[in-house]
Image (tube, rainbow, N blue to C red; front, side):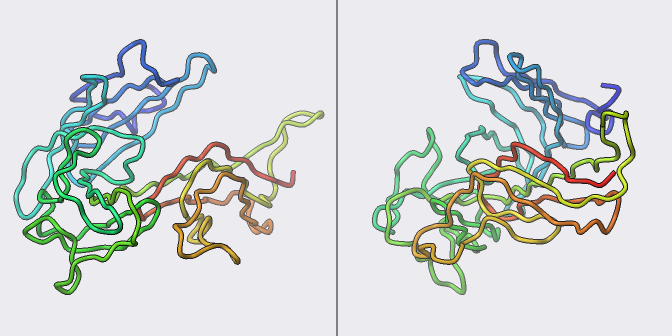
Length: 270
């Protein structure tokens, strides 16, 4: 932990995925005293290992695996009351502490289980103003009324006339700040970078995101705006124009959506 003391500062709980997992990766979860978590991910076949910080609205108390799923016990203040919530992770979840509404033709169907026992309405979020996400659409922020329904100015949210599931939960921002490229290896040895020209980043099945405040991956000219924005799998580039040798880039996603960053690279002058 010599290189990760800023992530694992005061460990209080340790959890891990069980051996024989169907996933290609294994994970170790460390919960710190301040309620943050440090997550270690490694892939033995590729010899890759990484650590990343996690935080949520509230405080992690424990992260563990049980019944084939990874669960978290989180202390949250919702609707003016503090309580502990047991939640589990799911690949399709784009927010924390979610509930979901099953819709058919844009109309909410009550009583249908979602991902194994989550209720159709967000009663646990009553009194909170939270984002609503429906099958690729960011519907905006809505107040959750006493019945657990999202409303704005006293009116129920109107969904697109499609079948699917609407997620209602707490925002889960993503933030990546890559290290600057300080040197490059050449035939004559390692040389210092004089200017950074471009940043390259590749994403897979990713919703809209930002780099240094600039938006990427939103609707494009000619695309059908009656359908949700497409998930992008491609390479983007950010031109720095060589203004600085080392630029601190911030890659972020503040609204509900999917995000998978697969590669980073720089074009530099040495």
